[in-house]
Length: 291
Picture 1 (cartoon, rainbow, N blue to C red):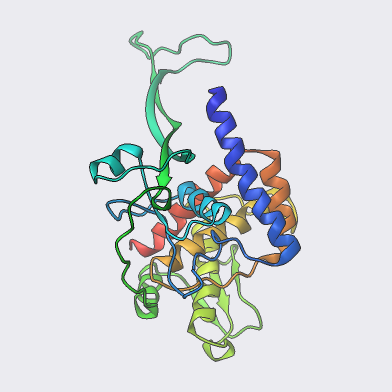
Picture 2 (cartoon, rainbow, N blue to C red):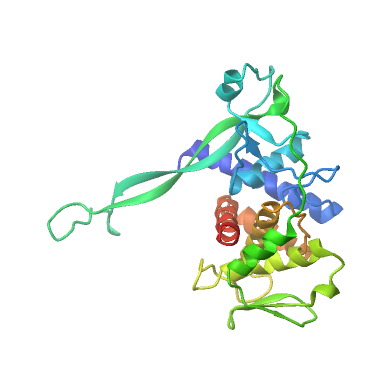
């Protein structure tokens, strides 16, 4: 791996871990797990054209926004600000946005020898390669973002999206969970929740777990509470539910406090892991809201 890219990935992971540790100590939920500002508005990273960032960029840019106290969620490249007759202020530090680019390489065996097909031609494979570029928050420039329209929760559309996904939801229980062996979600009755946001927050979390079944996105569940795969799946479900709910303007209800220390452990072990988790969370959320 490119050494500079490795450093940038390590920095991004270190920031996420730092905010999880602060959360563990203070109880202050990181903005990337609860992307709502003090006035109740949705804070979701977008570029100057209003297009939302996805995957790890959602998590990373929200974490950066929290770290530096930026009041806005609008980001852009240096050139994109110049194109709008804006200017990045002196001594402002650039941030990183990540993306994947496809690269075609020759397939090799374990000894490094190029594998050939039956006609003697080299076999090629296409792999995703992580890249990054620099952006600035609009608060680092002399421009002001356009006023964002107020966000109203749309429980009806979320309900329709979940219904369209054909999830088997069975009501009548004292807790919510996804039963992987039976491939169904068990939920308490709607009346047992304090409000719609609480009900749909819990349902969204379990719906993300549902996407991980072998018949769908085939994620590893983990064997027991606290093991590596279990912690990864819970963080995937938490991020995925945040992404799913945000798509419908609904505040997430954080429900995974018991896993924080485990998340810290697995992310510290592998600086690339948050990139994989965020990507899986995005795919899971899109599997439901794009139905």
